[in-house]
Image (cartoon, rainbow, N blue to C red; front, side, top):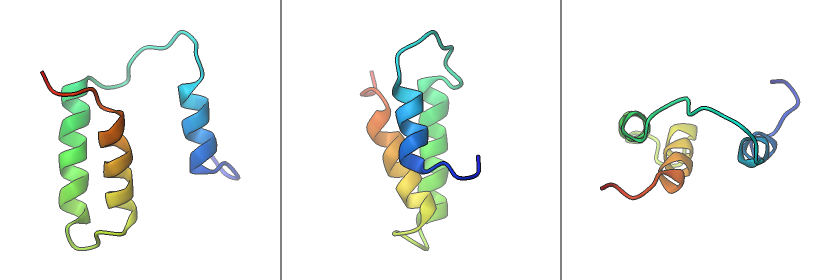
Length: 62
């Protein structure tokens, strides 16, 4: 998606409408864990940033 900022992507995702989930919460938690491992060497890099964004959007674990 050339020319689209991260903020524009997130805004589009948060607009109301009919959608189906791409991932389950468990799958998303697994991805956050993998991103955190990738980010271990570079805590300020893109993997760490994405892991933080995703983690904030996940519901609290049961």
